[in-house]
Length: 465
Image (spheres, rainbow, N blue to C red):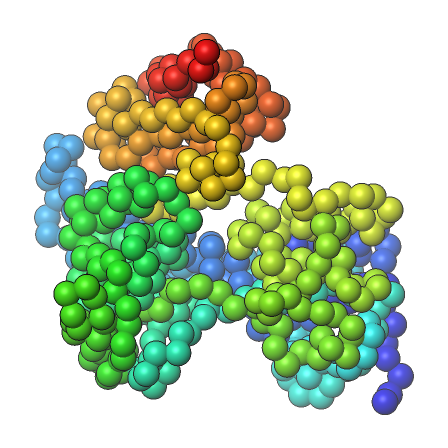
């Protein structure tokens, strides 16, 4: 084996946490190499969160124009140009690539484009995209390899060449009938976007409700919102087989309580979960163990089973959100410097960017029940929030979970306008361990969506005597 190039830190993958760590360490004077197979900056700015939200916003604009007459603006017939939708998204991606390349240059971290695999402890062989190989070793190594879309073992599915979110964001035409397999966050976001662009859309969910991690009332509210826009939702529908080719003609056969049903469409999007990119990269040669699900096994400090090797982001089993990867970066950064930051004491929020959006932080009502926690629950329809009287954004509700024998806020869920921004206020209160009464009695500006927090917390039942 040739002599390896020595670095202080080698980072395999350029996702959010890894690139921030690379730039930080390089600015601190460390010699750092980042190995990236395909996307400069990782998937978030290239094919995931930012591009998807870009297209979701284009879909929202289309929806507003289509419904402009409701607000007194008369518009001629609306036409959607998917090539322009795609071009707007790609322009943003190009700007992101330029930003990332400049960030690597100014930091001093070396970006190496190629496929890396471990060939020994803390040693990575890189097959370069432009030909040749390099052998890298680091005093410390960080695994930041992300996940990819799961394709279930359904007869005919592989041959059908179904879309994942990556290909769905590259379409320059409008599917006449998009079938979405999976009623989770990605599937729902894409379903609503393409319905607003003008596609017929059917969501097929094998489970008993959409968004299996959410409370039943939350899932039902979202189902109603989607149905109100003309999206067909099939629940408890088990896929049996697939025939045809996505982009041409596709038939999905499902089994329901009423028997088998055939769904005919033009395109098929699969959004049923994620698989860690841990296969065939030599982790066994590095002494890095995987858990039962195939994710890198880490402790609360994000250390792997191999000394001097860390893992960040989705492949480490962290919640699959960019903001969590950013926090992973902070944990590894500080622990590399002798700190003792952990993953098991953080409060993780998330937002599904439908319209209206879904936001949650902390425990849901059903999670509290499973944990055996005694809680008080309060809800407020968005139609009771005064701002929605002016904007007609009356769909959804706010929901809060409070301890039964203490006034600490344990969780908050909201489907409604500006849900993510309102949730951030609740998250702040939870981090500060404020009693819910502080928000109940706060003077909140009128007319804002957050003003609804007063009556929401006013609905919290009193403590049991």
